[in-house]
Length: 291
Image (cartoon, rainbow, N blue to C red; front, side, top):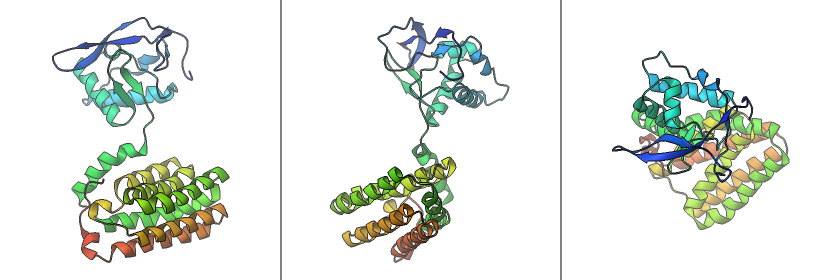
């Protein structure tokens, strides 16, 4: 494992029940039967990195330091962290503080808490969709509208298409073309299928640029709001128009024409905005929880 040195292996965890919930408190020797997660050698000094924090927000500091430990040691998704009792002793913190830190890590999408014989805190890779909940709450409290969504999409997505036309591989272009095909077939049959494929196309362009920050921003926006929760619906004719627009964008990207890709994406979004603004009250309505 990158960043690790030989040492005592992580051990299989056991779960005991308390009057509050299930926590990991003990361990027993691991065996070759455990295939669920990787048995990671635990260097004797590596967890010294997780020194007792000085901040008053101890649980958050522990969570941040655990993220640094995971990244610094190259822990891959599926790796099991030490059991609660061991982590608590290493950090010199109590059960409640440690649990708060683990819950925070789970909310960040850094770990998954599994119960049972093979359970524990399991490393995972955060996904932009993990931002859906926090972003939704933020925008709801701020009173964001569809106007706000369209404005930011017009700022970001044409440039995303421009970048994609410069960077995308043949396989990635084929992925976009396949999305257009699915949009024409499944999208015509089902409104829900259309919405999902529409989101996929826009997210895929951002993902295939290779720009991690841009991907996270675009995918989080796509995962939260596309107008459906505000009452926007798409007729069969409108779905066909969207599929045509996606095909033009994909073609410009396939030809490696950044300016054309930008132009087609901007035209697509402006057309969508025009469709939405036929009902001005809809555009000015506060955003709602997404489907």
